[in-house]
Length: 199
Image (cartoon, rainbow, N blue to C red; front, side, top):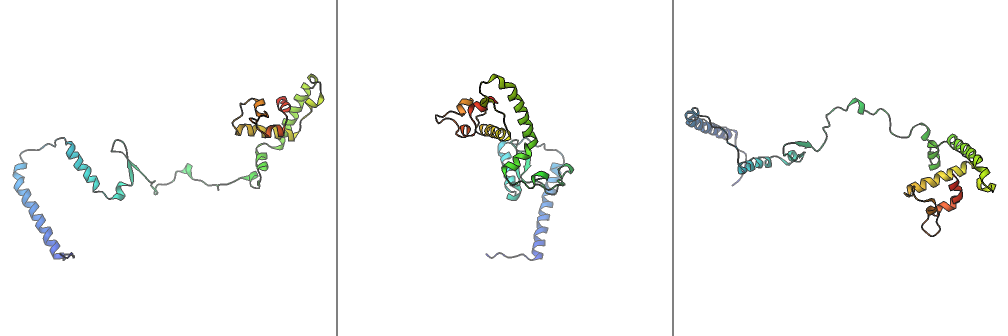
């Protein structure tokens, strides 16, 4: 049996036959149904499964375009509505990237100096040296309480960064400097334990 298109007249004839059949069915049942009203009864589990099969008739593009909630009623869209206008507070007017002082930075040291400037280091050195001057009389040897400089303060800050990155910020200082293999080798290389303990 070959499938082909029906001519327009054949389609119109089929439609007329369907209309005549539905009108005759309505006229047969019209007198009976006008006297009494049938209330819809609660559906059984089988009937509700039939209504679920109606969802099976939906195209996949409609079914897959949303998530269904636990209550089987709430529908959440999988994709954002692109036709929605962006809110005023969410409109970005500036370009992303580095600003002002950070534009020419190429090394880690330059980037770090943007956070802790030379002025801050100088102030820390000055205040530390004042503290050392107050403690000097309690020491017998002058080399144990010699004044500090910017290089030594940066080294101390570096050791603190390393201890923090290794999650050893609450570790005992002697444990960090231990020479039995459990310590961190960069600590004794950078500064003696007495000098760190002095601060």
